Length: 449
Image (tube, rainbow, N blue to C red):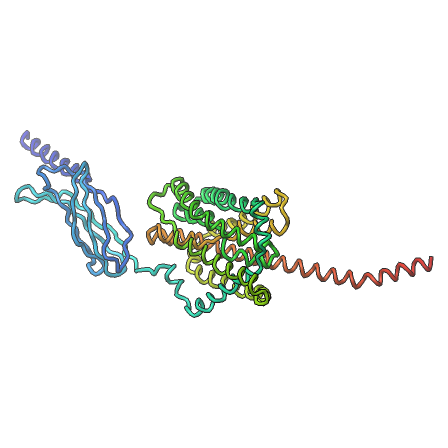
């Protein structure tokens, strides 16, 4: 009887010991990348808390359920405070497969299975084309046709610049200072605040902040012409803000990346910014020279500037929507709302501050346009240079959304402005026609009296 009880207790202890061992977990999957097909390799990091009896006696063995999707290249081991195994994988085609990860210990010639993790699911996504690159494959003939038209249009705008206005702005630079403060201080702060209120992801929030800190867009002078603003002031403000962007974009990127918890080196598109500045200055300078040397040619250019501007504006809006159509598929309500708010706030701030400073109406319009119509493609260039492809795709939604919403809002403002002017002209014509009859009626009344 005592012998049987002893055997039962011994078996019980053995069973409990084995059960306890089975409940102890040594392995933990720390990092698993999203793998893409056609990618050379990916990695999975597994940490082990197993205490080895012999130095480097433990090792990891990995089995792949479907080798057509995934293959193991090698497993590397790094032993510090915690042992980490890095599993290097090669992908072949899209799909889903399971991994079996086994931790083994080899004591001399004996091998012992310490732990096994089954059904570690790995998804391999099919290779995606970069949305930016995919959307850039439009007809090159259109670009070859547009470029001479843009240069001619800028040259025509140069013919409309008044040097006296430049001298006045130099003596009274308040509009330029207002635009700079709004573009590089107020707009980035508002963009950051709105992204936090709407709880956007860090990369997307950074994209909006960088879009808000961009200088005035090159197409702002088109709207300044069509809305009867100060064209000379608009061109000057665009050049000054583009020059300031070389300093302020790095400063704002550093400040707001830290606030958003992003780290890394942010590459400012210096060459693109300088090229943008030269692309504005050179043809406009040629137009100024033509105006003073060949006045008759300048008169011809001034006549074609409005229809040419309207054509270029239409083509620019079409290309912007075509480029952004891929990104629009990923836009949610919060992103669309922010895309509408950014240019609207810029317009509101610019016009309100200029009005408070009691500046003339054309100047108020110009400051509003420069603050609301931003060069979003500088932000896009910086994002593409600074982030990995996955993050860049997320962040690039911001500049495209702002560019498209800005174009829609400016077109709406232009339409309302033209309707208002047309209604005013019709009312003036009616008043002119009705004024003689009113005079005759007044005369008849006086005669009958």
